[in-house]
Image (cartoon, rainbow, N blue to C red; front, top):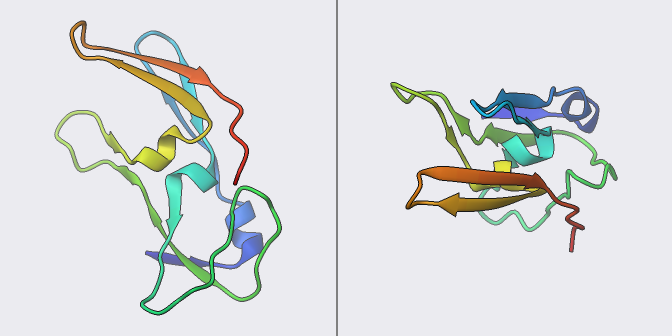
Length: 102
């Protein structure tokens, strides 16, 4: 868990994962970092809009590299993408999507 000001959060890098097919999956900070809510905290920010916040907020990465092979991506990493899981053929289809915040 790490605290960031809005300005610091804006400087976080994209994470790019290149799949064996050659597809480059670019995961922006709003999709690989999740705000940590403290008990009773009713405030929330939309890190996608760029509207900012004052002070610092706590975030945790949703990309896990502790696996012996590969990595685990949280569902947040799939933001702005359409994902199709073909379990039978052990394949994943990924396409960029235009997803508007609610």
